[in-house]
Length: 279
Image (spheres, rainbow, N blue to C red):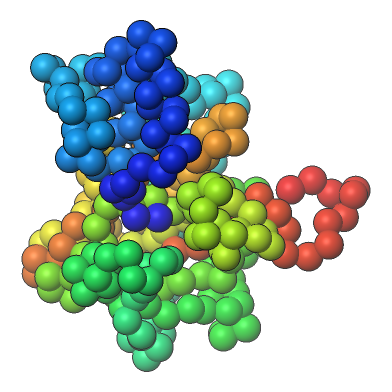
């Protein structure tokens, strides 16, 4: 999902209904910004700018991660924040596996796209190249796919095919979220069958010489690519709604290249559910 920049009638009604009830414009500004709307769009709609930094304003709707229901993955490290369930896992893949996957990616690249073409220029917004791996492409991809599912304890039928991405010097993917925006054409198109995205599981396949970090700007976390390291996070809040704090960007590669693979999971299975099994 790209960052939203305009308000539809539903959002405008929500904004001005709450302001008419006496709600603080600073708090309204903070909520809208946390929901992914651009600073200038909020400023124009509210004719208001807070006197203090947005990070110092408490969001009255903020719901922290449920610390009593966190994913438990041996050998992983949870990033120190209560806003996102975000983990790293060193050496999830070894050097030989990473090198083989890089070769596969390079053989199957096409220009990356955004989920709703035409909203922003792909040339400006997402400039990497992409390929898709089904499990039957070779034994390594099938094995890695299975290991990712086992790591998260999610059945394979809830997962999308693995996607590979390749970033050359200067290429990037600007601020976005991985979930589909509810009540939009985007969700109707991509979430109609399997529903919302839940977990993202990404693996760096090489050490980038310079640049290429993954930055979660809303929680102040920047992760440096490291060969074989997995980064995975829950795109949803404890109540099942999309977590805007998962907004992130792939910073431009400054020297060398960056290769990664990513697998996403959904709330629904791609096959008829078995009532005797749980997701």
